[in-house]
Structure formats: C-alpha cells, structure tokens
Length: 553
Picture 1: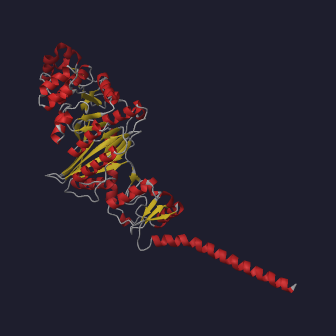
Picture 2: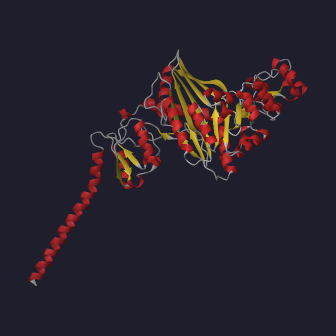
Picture 3: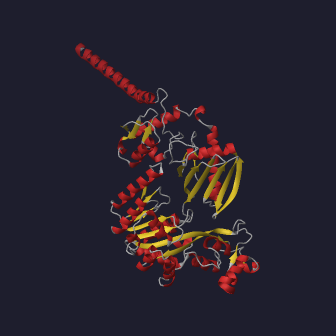
C-alpha cells in the first residue's frame, strides 16, 4: 500500500511538472508573436503600407502584403502568385523603394502586423506636413467644384499670382484667384496625390501623372476622395516663361447611365451617323479611325462604340484594348494598360510591346487608344492585314486628313489605298447645345453680319429655323447652354476615293465622296443640327468656317 501511495505521488508530481511545462509553453508561444512584431518594428523600422502612409495602395492589395522601410516584404502565403502582389512589386521598384524577396506568412500574421502598427506606430506630428495635408484637401475641393459643373479641364497658372480656369462646354473661364505661394503648394500637392507619376516632382521639367479613384490622405486616416462621378484625372505639369508652373488637369467622368453606355445617340449622333457606325461594326476585318483635336470626344465615342460592338456580338468575341493608360471601362473587353514608362521614348517602346502582345493574344478585335508614332501605326495595319478588326484614334483635322496624317507618319501608300484595309474614317467635334428654354431666333438680329451670311447661304428658310444663344435661365444655370453634342463626318471609303486622296487630288476626292458615296461633311452635319435648333449659328461658324464660304478641302 505504501508503495502504491508513493507511485501515485510520483505520477501526480509528473503531471504537475508537465502541466507547468505546458503552461510555460503556452505563455512563451503567446509572447512569441509579440517578440516577432517588436523585431519587425525595431530600430525605427516603419510599415510603409500602413493606411495613411506615403505609399498609396488600395485596401484589397494591403490585405495581401506588408512592406517595411528596411525592405522586409511579407506576402500572404495563399496569394503568392496574385497579380496584385506582382503589380505592387513593380510599383515599389518604380518608386525606388527598398524591397527584398517575399517572405510568406499567414493571413492572421499580416492582420496582427497591421493591428500592432496602428496601436504602436501612430504617425508622429513632425512626420505630417500639415500644409501639404491642407493643400491636398484644397485639391479635392477644386476638383469637386469642377465636377459639379461637368468641367472637362482645370488649368492652374502660377505666375505673380495663381489663376484657376475651368473649361466648361469647351470655353475657358476664370474661376478662382490666389497668391503665388498657394499655387506652388497646390501644384506640389496635386503631384503628391497622383497614383501614377514620376518618382519625384521636378518644377522645371515637363511631367505627366494620373490620379485614380480614392486613396488614403497622406498623413491621416481619412480618404482623399474624388467625386463619385470622376473616374480619374490626367495631370500635365509644365514649366512656363514669365511664371513658375502651369498645371492642366483633364477630368474623366463615369457614364451617367452605365446601362445605356453603348448608346451613341446620347452623344448627339443622328440616324444617318448611327447607320454608318453600324456598318463599320459589322465589318470583321480592317481599320477604322476616329480623329479630332484634343478634347473632341474621340475616346468617349470609341468606348461607346466598342461597348455596342460587344453587345451586338453577344460578347462572343475577344476584344483587346491597348491604352496609355485606360481611361474608361469597357465591360467584356480585356484592357491592357501602358503605364510603366516615364519618357516619350519609353512610352512608345512599351506601347509597341503591348500592341505586339495583343496581336499574339488570339484577338478578334483590337482597340488601340491612340496612334502617335509610325511603329504603332504599322502594327495597327499589321493587325488589319492579319485578319483582325482594328479601331483607333488619331489627331487629324478632318476625316479625309486621316489618310494624310498616316502618310506623313510614314505608312506606305499601298496600304492607304487598299479599301480592304481602310474601312472607316471618322472626324468629330463637340458643339455647345442650345438651351431650348431661352434660345433666341436670329430674326431678332437680322442686321448682324453672321445673320446676313446665313441668309446668303440658306435664304429665308435658314432665317426661319436658326437660333442663337439666349440670355440664360433657371434650366441652364443662366448659361444659355445645356451641355455639348458630338457632330461627326464619316467616310466609308472605296478604292477610287483612296486613290484620289493619296494622289493629292483632295478636291476631286471630296466631291466624289459627297456625290457618289452619299457622304456628308462636318459643315453639312452641323448645319442640319443648326436648322433643328440644337446648336447656334456662331457655333457652326466657329468650327466649320463662314457659312457663305466653301469648305477649305
């Protein structure tokens, strides 16, 4: 019995020892993560991907990774090959940040790291540039003010003072004025707020950048929120003489009606133009080009047309786009961005690589955002030659001038005279639309020179059916204008037209187009809309020349 009691005591002691060891192990395990976290954040090491830090990434990407100032790069082990992780590595190297090889950790460990950082690594007051923070807020406020008026471009001119101008319905108007110091800080804040840009701001250099969506406000836990209807902002920074800086911001808006975003009629196209676009979309092979100056709505027309193409084909074709960078979403398309380049030479090289890749990616239709150089033009024609539908935009003065622009780039004449390759030539302008509630008949201004020219060109019928801008009313915010509408000229060329153009017989080519091919020039299209009361006399003469003159080409 005594022996049994002794054995029981030994067992109890062993159990107690094991229990103590287990408790110590649990306690040590509990301390271990804290020790690891303390090591990660030791010697002033900071978490660069913490919300509110200077490195701007979205919350979905942040959930997958963590980057520290010493280059420690932690990645969720279940997302080793996630495209967002790979894109982040490219971004970090572009910004010249130290980044080591990925170390794979669990999702719980990443969560613990961010929780620890937020509890123990508050942003020090001296790390926060309060002036910069305020200027970023001013940046958002200026953009919001512009977006409420559907401004297309914001111009910030910094000289002895700072002038902010808005382009509303195609016309420039001064909106705000500040001192020079405010303007310089504003421009720097705009650069710091961008998501795609050079690594450093250089006041005396030409630089481009882009602001996308909503990103954390630097130095705070708030958000730098763009207005909900603004998809992105393209920024162009320019040095200027007799001043210090000149910033131009192009606002890219989301569609007001996404469900009908393939509706070209909403842009101002009439039945005649809609039928021609339908015929172009029905062509499986060949090149169609949409031209016009900057700000003429080329990208919007191309986007709507691509959406309509996919809808008509029941999304049963592979539509690839190559854009620098993508501006508007095209549901159902694979949109390939060209963003990892700083200089124009690098952009041209990367654009050519992306277009070559698109041609090797089993496409049915390829949309090229813009043809700027010969290499891109040649690849675009190569796509048409190899049996693909190709769509692109180009800077040219008119639809016929597209051929001259391509020839000037260096495209061979035999390609430009082949009607199996060149399928559609489109040029367009945006005309201010009259407010139907306060517009005025030209009969009230019979003595004005423009009205006299109208009478010479169109007679009494023109006088009876033409209007000019009114004084403004409550329906148009006292502007006399209700937005803008697109007016195009569209050519579906044949071999005769192409031959005449390439031979330099432009006048014969235009006469052949308007007579034998039933074409309609921009001036004719604008005049039709003027006689329907949509646009005014001054707007037609502004874009198409005087009414009593024959078109220049």
